Image 1 (cartoon, rainbow, N blue to C red):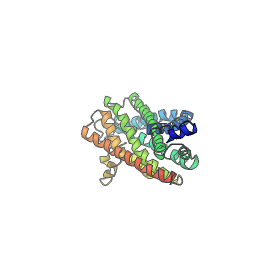
Image 2 (image 1 turned 90 degrees about the horizontal axis):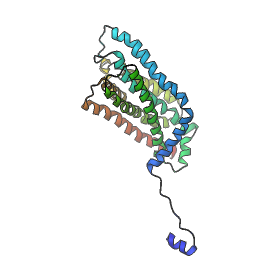
Image 3 (image 1 turned 180 degrees about the horizontal axis):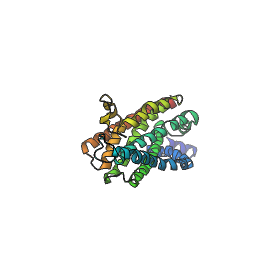
Length: 279
């Protein structure tokens, strides 16, 4: 019909360009966060390096000396406290970094800066801007975890070459927290909920999910609570890899739980984002 119209009117046929692929759309959303990060990355360089240094020096070496010289039962898999705690801190740091990247940046993009609204004024869809922002969080986690793993090696806290695989495990652990926190942050009207999230969620998991001592030392009623958290699975698998004795069966379980949390959180976040930004 357009060809017949062009013959009778002499007008050039209208050529409709193909719609960009989903990957290209997600890449455009990611490009915004990368451009913004180029302006602010200097403020994160020191914390990225100083955080693992502070943790491993103060807790791994300082407190670790007291634990290693103590007479009480420690149940640390026959290794020093530094080697025990370092891979746990690796996973726990990924969780904390993901939580920080998934709270105020998400709320700010909805309520204060309205970044998401500006992106939706383009051909980007809700799922594109969500996936692009989450992909940026994943890249931030890769940087943080890589630096932490390097500091662990410098401290002599790595006992096996299997520890290289702890990097993707820690990143997955962080994403298992990022996606549900994205949904939580998008549903908030103010930042009061973030204080409750950190006080009753992030901090208790950081302290009681096997990072500093085995979960078996918790009261029996609390141990199942730790077992269902993605952090406990991330800590356990990172520790097994760092110490050089991973087991296939337990490794698959430790990967499956945070993977389920990641996917379920993404689906929930997509629903909340759509309700908040579109309907």
